[in-house]
Amino acid sequence: MNNKNGIVFGLANERSYAWYITQSLRDAGANIIFSYLPGDKNLRRLMSALKELEMEDATCIPCDVTSDEQLDDLFNKTAMIMPQLDFIVHSVAYANKEYLQIGNFHTTPRQVWAEAMDISAYSLVAIAQRAADLMTEGGSIVAMSYLGAEKVVPGYNVMGVAKAALETASRYLAGSLGYRNIRVNCISGGPLRTLSAMGVANFDRMLDCQEKYSPMQRNITGDEVGKTALFLLSPWASAITGEVIHVDAGFHTLASFPGLKEQIPCHSAIPV
Ligand code: NAD
Image 1 (cartoon, protein in one colour):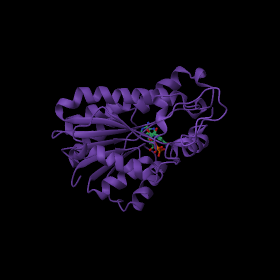
Image 2: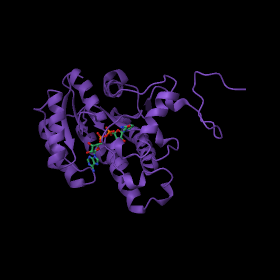
Image 3: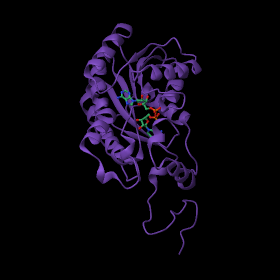
Image 4: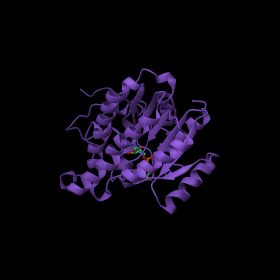
Protein backbone atom coordinates (compact mmCIF):
# COMPACT_ATOMS: atom_id res chain seq x y z
CA MET A 1 0.00 0.00 0.00
CA ASN A 2 3.06 2.26 -0.17
CA ASN A 3 1.90 5.68 -1.40
CA LYS A 4 -1.61 4.43 -2.15
CA ASN A 5 -4.23 7.15 -1.57
CA GLY A 6 -7.55 6.75 0.19
CA ILE A 7 -10.29 8.14 2.40
CA VAL A 8 -11.35 6.64 5.73
CA PHE A 9 -14.94 7.39 6.79
CA GLY A 10 -16.02 6.80 10.40
CA LEU A 11 -12.99 7.16 12.66
CA ALA A 12 -14.71 8.51 15.80
CA ASN A 13 -12.09 7.67 18.45
CA GLU A 14 -9.35 5.19 19.34
CA ARG A 15 -11.90 2.40 19.90
CA SER A 16 -13.45 2.68 16.41
CA TYR A 17 -13.06 -0.15 13.93
CA ALA A 18 -11.77 2.57 11.57
CA TRP A 19 -8.93 3.30 14.04
CA TYR A 20 -7.59 -0.23 13.73
CA ILE A 21 -8.00 -0.21 9.95
CA THR A 22 -6.12 3.10 9.81
CA GLN A 23 -3.33 1.68 11.96
CA SER A 24 -2.84 -1.21 9.50
CA LEU A 25 -2.96 1.12 6.49
CA ARG A 26 -0.51 3.54 8.11
CA ASP A 27 1.93 0.71 8.85
CA ALA A 28 1.66 -0.36 5.21
CA GLY A 29 2.58 3.14 3.99
CA ALA A 30 -0.80 4.44 2.74
CA ASN A 31 -1.74 8.15 2.49
CA ILE A 32 -5.09 8.82 4.16
CA ILE A 33 -7.66 11.63 4.26
CA PHE A 34 -10.19 11.39 7.10
CA SER A 35 -13.84 12.30 6.78
CA TYR A 36 -15.80 12.90 9.98
CA LEU A 37 -19.35 13.80 11.00
CA PRO A 38 -19.34 17.65 11.30
CA GLY A 39 -19.07 18.97 14.87
CA ASP A 40 -16.35 20.41 17.11
CA LYS A 41 -16.58 17.50 19.55
CA ASN A 42 -16.23 14.97 16.71
CA LEU A 43 -13.19 16.81 15.34
CA ARG A 44 -11.56 16.95 18.81
CA ARG A 45 -12.09 13.21 19.28
CA LEU A 46 -10.72 12.47 15.81
CA MET A 47 -7.64 14.63 16.39
CA SER A 48 -6.88 12.90 19.67
CA ALA A 49 -7.26 9.47 18.00
CA LEU A 50 -4.94 10.57 15.17
CA LYS A 51 -2.41 11.79 17.73
CA GLU A 52 -2.28 8.28 19.17
CA LEU A 53 -1.50 7.08 15.65
CA GLU A 54 1.09 9.87 15.20
CA MET A 55 -0.98 11.08 12.22
CA GLU A 56 -2.12 14.45 13.53
CA ASP A 57 -0.92 16.15 10.31
CA ALA A 58 -3.43 14.22 8.19
CA THR A 59 -6.16 16.14 6.33
CA CYS A 60 -9.58 15.89 8.01
CA ILE A 61 -12.67 16.99 6.09
CA PRO A 62 -16.16 17.22 7.66
CA CYS A 63 -18.94 15.41 5.81
CA ASP A 64 -22.38 14.23 6.86
CA VAL A 65 -22.92 11.30 4.49
CA THR A 66 -26.64 12.14 4.16
CA SER A 67 -25.76 15.40 2.36
CA ASP A 68 -24.96 15.27 -1.38
CA GLU A 69 -23.52 18.81 -1.15
CA GLN A 70 -21.12 17.82 1.64
CA LEU A 71 -20.11 14.66 -0.24
CA ASP A 72 -19.43 16.72 -3.40
CA ASP A 73 -17.39 19.18 -1.35
CA LEU A 74 -15.39 16.35 0.26
CA PHE A 75 -14.55 14.73 -3.08
CA ASN A 76 -13.71 18.08 -4.73
CA LYS A 77 -11.27 18.83 -1.91
CA THR A 78 -9.89 15.28 -2.07
CA ALA A 79 -9.31 15.59 -5.84
CA MET A 80 -7.09 18.62 -5.22
CA ILE A 81 -4.91 16.67 -2.76
CA MET A 82 -5.22 13.21 -4.30
CA PRO A 83 -6.09 13.44 -8.01
CA GLN A 84 -5.94 9.66 -8.12
CA LEU A 85 -7.65 7.60 -5.42
CA ASP A 86 -6.93 3.92 -4.62
CA PHE A 87 -9.16 2.99 -1.70
CA ILE A 88 -12.15 3.84 0.48
CA VAL A 89 -12.97 2.59 3.99
CA HIS A 90 -16.68 2.87 4.84
CA SER A 91 -17.04 2.45 8.61
CA VAL A 92 -20.19 4.49 9.19
CA ALA A 93 -23.56 3.53 10.65
CA TYR A 94 -26.40 5.04 12.65
CA ALA A 95 -29.88 4.08 13.88
CA ASN A 96 -32.04 5.68 16.55
CA LYS A 97 -31.17 3.65 19.65
CA GLU A 98 -34.71 3.87 20.99
CA TYR A 99 -35.53 1.24 18.33
CA LEU A 100 -32.54 -0.99 19.08
CA GLN A 101 -34.26 -2.69 22.01
CA ILE A 102 -35.00 -6.40 22.31
CA GLY A 103 -38.41 -7.26 20.88
CA ASN A 104 -39.42 -3.85 19.50
CA PHE A 105 -38.47 -4.23 15.81
CA HIS A 106 -42.14 -4.23 14.78
CA THR A 107 -42.52 -0.70 16.21
CA THR A 108 -39.90 0.83 13.86
CA PRO A 109 -41.30 4.08 12.42
CA ARG A 110 -40.84 4.96 8.73
CA GLN A 111 -38.51 7.86 9.54
CA VAL A 112 -36.24 5.73 11.78
CA TRP A 113 -36.03 3.11 9.00
CA ALA A 114 -35.27 5.71 6.32
CA GLU A 115 -32.59 7.41 8.41
CA ALA A 116 -30.82 4.13 9.27
CA MET A 117 -30.90 3.05 5.60
CA ASP A 118 -29.65 6.41 4.34
CA ILE A 119 -26.70 6.73 6.73
CA SER A 120 -25.74 3.07 6.99
CA ALA A 121 -26.43 1.69 3.49
CA TYR A 122 -27.14 4.29 0.78
CA SER A 123 -24.03 6.20 1.86
CA LEU A 124 -21.88 3.40 0.39
CA VAL A 125 -23.45 3.99 -3.04
CA ALA A 126 -23.19 7.80 -2.69
CA ILE A 127 -19.50 7.49 -1.78
CA ALA A 128 -18.65 4.84 -4.39
CA GLN A 129 -20.17 6.83 -7.30
CA ARG A 130 -17.96 9.82 -6.43
CA ALA A 131 -14.85 7.80 -5.56
CA ALA A 132 -15.04 5.83 -8.83
CA ASP A 133 -14.37 9.02 -10.85
CA LEU A 134 -11.02 9.39 -9.05
CA MET A 135 -10.12 5.68 -9.17
CA THR A 136 -8.56 5.97 -12.62
CA GLU A 137 -6.13 3.10 -11.99
CA GLY A 138 -8.72 0.81 -10.35
CA GLY A 139 -9.42 0.72 -6.63
CA SER A 140 -10.77 -1.10 -3.62
CA ILE A 141 -13.69 -0.24 -1.33
CA VAL A 142 -14.34 -1.95 2.01
CA ALA A 143 -17.46 -1.51 4.17
CA MET A 144 -18.10 -2.74 7.72
CA SER A 145 -21.05 -5.07 8.31
CA TYR A 146 -22.35 -7.41 11.00
CA LEU A 147 -24.03 -10.83 11.32
CA GLY A 148 -27.36 -9.07 12.02
CA ALA A 149 -27.56 -8.66 8.20
CA GLU A 150 -28.07 -12.42 7.85
CA LYS A 151 -29.71 -13.62 11.06
CA VAL A 152 -32.01 -12.21 13.73
CA VAL A 153 -29.82 -10.78 16.48
CA PRO A 154 -32.08 -9.61 19.32
CA GLY A 155 -31.91 -5.82 19.65
CA TYR A 156 -30.05 -5.22 16.36
CA ASN A 157 -33.38 -4.61 14.60
CA VAL A 158 -33.46 -1.92 11.90
CA MET A 159 -29.66 -1.87 11.85
CA GLY A 160 -29.76 -5.51 10.69
CA VAL A 161 -32.01 -4.49 7.79
CA ALA A 162 -29.60 -1.67 6.92
CA LYS A 163 -26.62 -4.05 7.03
CA ALA A 164 -28.43 -6.47 4.69
CA ALA A 165 -28.92 -3.53 2.29
CA LEU A 166 -25.27 -2.54 2.71
CA GLU A 167 -24.04 -6.05 1.86
CA THR A 168 -26.36 -6.31 -1.15
CA ALA A 169 -25.36 -2.82 -2.30
CA SER A 170 -21.71 -3.83 -2.10
CA ARG A 171 -22.40 -6.79 -4.41
CA TYR A 172 -24.25 -4.59 -6.94
CA LEU A 173 -21.44 -2.03 -6.77
CA ALA A 174 -18.95 -4.84 -7.36
CA GLY A 175 -21.09 -5.75 -10.39
CA SER A 176 -21.23 -2.28 -11.88
CA LEU A 177 -17.65 -1.17 -11.11
CA GLY A 178 -15.75 -4.42 -11.68
CA TYR A 179 -14.96 -3.70 -15.37
CA ARG A 180 -13.06 -0.62 -14.15
CA ASN A 181 -11.01 -2.83 -11.82
CA ILE A 182 -12.75 -1.34 -8.78
CA ARG A 183 -13.45 -3.98 -6.13
CA VAL A 184 -16.09 -3.71 -3.39
CA ASN A 185 -16.19 -5.99 -0.34
CA CYS A 186 -17.60 -6.12 3.18
CA ILE A 187 -16.12 -7.28 6.45
CA SER A 188 -18.63 -8.76 8.86
CA GLY A 189 -16.91 -8.06 12.17
CA GLY A 190 -17.59 -9.60 15.56
CA PRO A 191 -18.81 -7.37 18.40
CA LEU A 192 -16.30 -4.76 19.56
CA ARG A 193 -16.89 -2.24 22.36
CA THR A 194 -17.08 1.05 20.43
CA LEU A 195 -19.14 4.24 20.76
CA SER A 196 -21.81 2.99 18.33
CA ALA A 197 -21.94 -0.45 19.94
CA MET A 198 -23.07 1.16 23.19
CA GLY A 199 -26.38 2.01 21.46
CA VAL A 200 -27.31 -1.67 20.99
CA ALA A 201 -29.36 -2.89 23.97
CA ASN A 202 -28.13 -6.47 23.84
CA PHE A 203 -24.45 -5.65 23.33
CA ASP A 204 -22.94 -7.20 26.50
CA ARG A 205 -24.83 -10.41 25.78
CA MET A 206 -23.46 -10.41 22.23
CA LEU A 207 -19.92 -10.26 23.64
CA ASP A 208 -20.67 -13.02 26.17
CA CYS A 209 -22.22 -15.34 23.55
CA GLN A 210 -19.33 -14.76 21.18
CA GLU A 211 -16.84 -15.73 23.87
CA LYS A 212 -18.78 -18.73 25.08
CA TYR A 213 -20.06 -20.28 21.87
CA SER A 214 -17.90 -19.22 18.90
CA PRO A 215 -15.77 -22.08 17.55
CA MET A 216 -12.64 -20.25 18.72
CA GLN A 217 -14.30 -19.44 22.07
CA ARG A 218 -13.20 -15.84 22.15
CA ASN A 219 -14.00 -12.31 21.12
CA ILE A 220 -12.09 -10.72 18.28
CA THR A 221 -9.73 -7.76 18.37
CA GLY A 222 -9.97 -4.56 16.34
CA ASP A 223 -6.53 -5.33 15.02
CA GLU A 224 -7.83 -8.55 13.40
CA VAL A 225 -10.39 -6.52 11.45
CA GLY A 226 -7.71 -3.92 10.63
CA LYS A 227 -5.48 -6.53 9.06
CA THR A 228 -8.34 -8.10 7.07
CA ALA A 229 -9.27 -4.66 5.71
CA LEU A 230 -5.64 -4.07 4.73
CA PHE A 231 -5.66 -7.39 2.84
CA LEU A 232 -8.89 -6.55 0.99
CA LEU A 233 -7.63 -3.06 0.11
CA SER A 234 -4.27 -4.35 -1.11
CA PRO A 235 -3.26 -6.00 -4.41
CA TRP A 236 -3.12 -9.34 -2.55
CA ALA A 237 -6.93 -9.42 -2.90
CA SER A 238 -6.84 -8.46 -6.60
CA ALA A 239 -9.49 -11.01 -7.69
CA ILE A 240 -11.80 -10.70 -4.66
CA THR A 241 -14.93 -8.60 -5.09
CA GLY A 242 -18.58 -8.75 -3.99
CA GLU A 243 -17.49 -10.78 -0.96
CA VAL A 244 -18.43 -10.65 2.73
CA ILE A 245 -15.57 -11.87 4.90
CA HIS A 246 -16.50 -12.77 8.47
CA VAL A 247 -13.93 -11.81 11.10
CA ASP A 248 -15.78 -13.27 14.06
CA ALA A 249 -13.84 -16.33 15.26
CA GLY A 250 -16.34 -18.48 13.33
CA PHE A 251 -19.47 -17.33 15.20
CA HIS A 252 -21.52 -17.01 11.97
CA THR A 253 -21.10 -20.75 11.24
CA LEU A 254 -23.21 -21.81 14.25
CA ALA A 255 -26.76 -23.09 14.05
CA SER A 256 -28.98 -22.34 17.01
CA PHE A 257 -31.17 -24.93 18.70
CA PRO A 258 -34.56 -23.40 19.42
CA GLY A 259 -36.18 -24.97 22.44
CA LEU A 260 -32.93 -25.57 24.27
CA LYS A 261 -32.48 -23.15 27.17
CA GLU A 262 -28.76 -22.90 26.43
CA GLN A 263 -26.94 -22.99 23.11
CA ILE A 264 -24.55 -25.97 23.04
CA PRO A 265 -20.90 -24.94 22.93
CA CYS A 266 -19.24 -26.32 19.77
CA HIS A 267 -16.62 -28.24 21.67
CA SER A 268 -18.97 -30.23 23.89
CA ALA A 269 -20.56 -33.56 22.96
CA ILE A 270 -24.15 -33.36 21.70
CA PRO A 271 -26.33 -34.65 24.56
CA VAL A 272 -28.32 -37.80 23.74
P1 NAD B 1 -17.94 4.16 15.87
O1 NAD B 1 -18.97 4.88 16.67
O2 NAD B 1 -16.54 4.29 16.29
O3 NAD B 1 -18.05 4.57 14.32
C1 NAD B 1 -19.28 4.93 13.71
C2 NAD B 1 -18.99 6.15 12.86
O4 NAD B 1 -20.13 6.51 12.05
C3 NAD B 1 -18.66 7.38 13.73
O5 NAD B 1 -17.42 7.93 13.32
C4 NAD B 1 -19.80 8.35 13.39
O6 NAD B 1 -19.42 9.71 13.44
C5 NAD B 1 -20.11 7.92 11.95
N1 NAD B 1 -21.38 8.47 11.49
C6 NAD B 1 -22.62 8.26 12.00
N2 NAD B 1 -23.53 8.98 11.31
C7 NAD B 1 -22.84 9.64 10.32
C8 NAD B 1 -23.21 10.54 9.30
N3 NAD B 1 -24.50 10.93 9.10
N4 NAD B 1 -22.24 11.04 8.48
C9 NAD B 1 -20.94 10.68 8.65
N5 NAD B 1 -20.53 9.83 9.60
C10 NAD B 1 -21.47 9.31 10.44
O7 NAD B 1 -18.40 2.62 15.91
P2 NAD B 1 -17.83 1.33 15.16
O8 NAD B 1 -18.39 0.20 15.95
O9 NAD B 1 -16.40 1.41 14.92
O10 NAD B 1 -18.64 1.36 13.80
C11 NAD B 1 -18.00 1.36 12.53
C12 NAD B 1 -18.70 0.39 11.59
O11 NAD B 1 -18.49 -0.94 12.08
C13 NAD B 1 -20.22 0.58 11.52
O12 NAD B 1 -20.65 0.36 10.20
C14 NAD B 1 -20.72 -0.51 12.44
O13 NAD B 1 -22.05 -0.88 12.17
C15 NAD B 1 -19.74 -1.60 12.07
N6 NAD B 1 -19.68 -2.73 13.01
C16 NAD B 1 -19.49 -2.54 14.34
C17 NAD B 1 -19.44 -3.64 15.20
C18 NAD B 1 -19.21 -3.46 16.68
O14 NAD B 1 -19.50 -4.40 17.44
N7 NAD B 1 -18.68 -2.33 17.13
C19 NAD B 1 -19.56 -4.96 14.69
C20 NAD B 1 -19.72 -5.12 13.31
C21 NAD B 1 -19.79 -4.01 12.47
